[in-house]
Amino acid sequence: MVNLELYRVFYTVAKCGSLTKAAELLYISQPAVSQAIKQLENQLGTTLFNRTHRGMELTPYGGELIFRPVEKALSLLENAENRIAELKTSPMGTIRIGASDTIFSYILADKIIEFNSIYPAVKFEMLMGTSVETLEQIKENKVDVGFFNLPFSDPEINVSASIYHLTDVFLAGRKYEGLKGRTVSYSELQEYPLLMLDNNTIARHALDTFTKGIGVELKPAIEVGSWDFMKKLAVSGMGIACIPREYAMKEIESGDLFEIDASPSLPVRAVGMAVPKNAPSVFALKKFIAMFHS
Image (tube, rainbow, N blue to C red; front, side, top):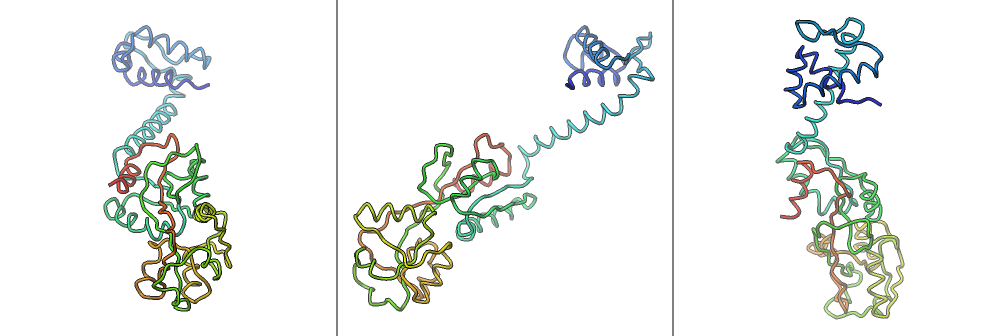
């Protein structure tokens, strides 16, 4: 196995031409420098220096042969160390973000644009998937930070912040205007075609858990994979949709959809943020995460 410290001592002695000067630069004793050179020579099976009255001179078939490769290797290592140090103090590098397309569109887009205006040298890699997939990406260190729907239960992930609240409501288009202005029970809602998210999502699980808790089991007429598609179906009159109010403000304000007064109200949910365990503490990532804490 390569012992980098031995080569670092060799290089310092070669540059200084003196065991004493090398020891001073390396903050070790002169005997320790001599021992390191002897150990490296034994390891390589050749003499690296000639000891002369002028100091330490590289041998033609030992020290001179390895000096340039060692110099290059140590320079590459130093550059790598400097690069890591720079990442900790400078806005550079790439931030890998995991989230659903909805979270990217409605919550993260403005933050990413704002961050880019402040730190244009930082690049973004966006990995889109469901909240369940994002949670797996966090555990597998495939993202630097992930955003996902709450609630969930996973002992391997610590939520670092709740960054956005979601208010699930039932929305309908003009076809169902007869439901406006009155309180509607969940039993009555079940008499209408219901539009719901796929049953393998956190949002759907939260809805099913709540309704079963009040003694109702809502059965969807149509299951879809995205909120935007669900909104289009609801606007067209194909059914009553269960959507976070925050994701449908445009349609509500335009009158294309209206909110049904369902009793009892669905519980408020949230979008959480987490980073992988042992995540590197780089400047760009810390600044990006700080935007959500503020």
